[in-house]
Image 1 (cartoon, one colour):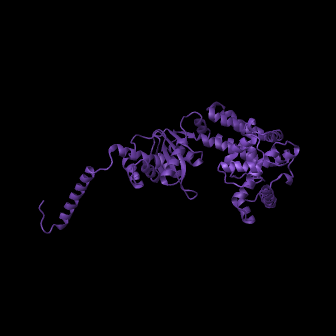
Image 2 (cartoon, helix red, strand yellow; image 1 turned 90 degrees about the vertical axis):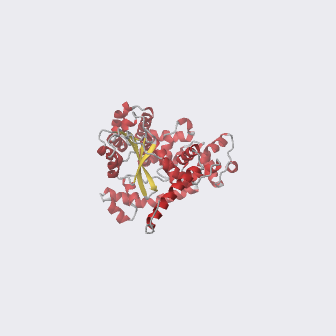
Image 3 (cartoon, rainbow, N blue to C red; image 1 turned 120 degrees about the vertical axis):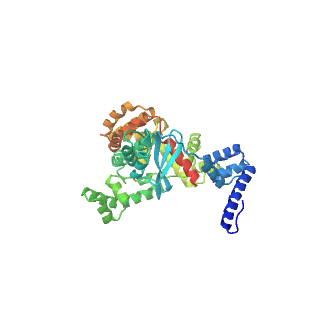
Length: 428
């Protein structure tokens, strides 16, 4: 090419184009990854993300950086052109407790389709309206997703998440136990607490409970007078969450269940106890050999409580367990309970029959979801509306079509949960 003296700009442009062509030819000639290796790098990036995949590739003698892995994933990713038929909706956190969005997954191809910036009904509805070919929408039980799917895709089948159905049923039973805690305390002869049966930590909790009773009584009196919750918060200075909990007859649990360092070693402790080791210090030393980092006091309290549990007396029933503990005991098979726990459960079921009925209804609902017995749903709703889990039954009745589809359709939101876990790993 011949250029005049005044065409310096054009000469630079032509020279730049030549350099680009030469560099692309050099890259093809000196390419450092074969197609097969590129395929391996691509799958490592898909499976593990950036930094974890780079670390694992280094151990496989395939040194690539995390940025290279992400570039390969982006370059080889091609969105499918086929229309969407079955999708799953769920919320996920861009930043926990700060900003939440919505993840949309193609349940047939097992891949993420879109990440919406929020979980508002209008945003989800607008996205679904752009895909009229969707036939099935598997979703969380939040009302926003159901409303959006109903407005955007009226003929589509909505499927409620089975895991959340069972978890909501268990939460409803726990709430029923909390509302019945005063009747349970009366049934077990524990309207007054025997301080001799309490550990040091439980005595501190009981004293705090007594201090809270006055403020709880004042809030309950205002609720009974019809004062709005916002006005009660302004008058008492307590949080809105506490006022709402007391207005729903909650907050009466004396001994709240807390996480303990020994929870992961309970099976080992049970084995040692059954083999004849009943000394707290000896159990603690054996636990130390298993990697236990807790103190001797934690194991000593467990041994004391276990020793008392084997001595059945009327006085043993004077201490009412936490509501969560009672719910756990009532939902555990009798073969796995100690004698004292069996006596406690029998006393509760005999004195609070409505709670026993609620337990039976929750068990039936769990079995219905597991066995896909959708024919029992109507009768279960009619019985449950008159029980302690009536609010949960009303929610099931309002979402009956989605719950019915959960027991008949094979798709589930479990795959979406797995995609969220993978997305968190990639994000890190």
